[in-house]
Amino acid sequence: MRAATCADPGQPLSAPQEEVLEAAWHIPDYRLDLTLECGQTFRWHRFGRGWLGVIEGRRVELVQAGTLFTARLWGRTQDLTRLENYLQIRTSLEAICATFPDDPHLHEAIRRWHGLRLLRQPAWECLASFLLSSAKQIVQICQVIERICRRWGRPVPGPATGPRLWSFPSPERLAAASESELRACGAGFRAPFLLAAARAVADGKLPLDDLPHRPYEEARERLLTLPGVGPKIADCVCLFGLGFLEAFPVDTWVKRVMQERYFGGRPVSEEVVARFGRRHFGRYAGYAQQYLFHDRRVGGGVFRPHQPGPSTA
Image (cartoon, rainbow, N blue to C red):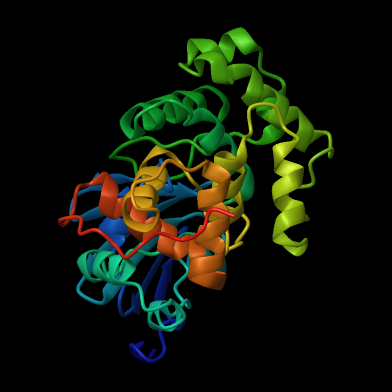
């Protein structure tokens, strides 16, 4: 068993124990707290010195100490590939940042929140979660998702003591639910949208597994055919669930920061902002979006007016 190094972050130290797998990696430029609390995922909780969550039906505990990450996974499989892909361990943040234009606003946000990463979440869980996120605060989104997982998910194997966890329900299980049952869990007006999406995925009308192999524009358009899915939700699913790092979701916070810092305070549409973001920041525009979103949402730094804004054409 050899030690992983910063130059080789993809090789774990692992020691399987019956149905528990323990692993460790040295990963540079990674802030687990920022990554799990920035609004891209809703099922991680602080637990002891680290974090507790569920990835594809497996209980996962994560702890970070500097560049050292340790993980404990429950379940029969000893494969770490899914966890590594979920955390995007092999992604070089330095290489991504090197592609950005000379932009003082983005560079300042990256300096303040350096180490924030994008996750690669299961596409169905990502779609369902963002359908439930509309017009809710993050804490409320987490509560609704937790109720739905307890009602339709399956118990997740884990230690005899500690919190009980449930898997995220499959589209087939949610497709069999009723709108009133979903509303009783707090889904509200989003219930019929979640139900329609579950049925579309379960019936094969929306081939989620195939979308990552399509062009970004096509995947986005397919998602937009679902009731309740607008450009922001479609781009969130493209970015966090399908791996399209050029996607640039625009919500209230992103629209505000972009108008302030790139359009001279002028009101512009969400689509104009998204189009500018993809063009200005390039193939990793989604990373730029997340840094600017987090910077504006938590109120970091002082806004300084930018040079005259771009054309909205």
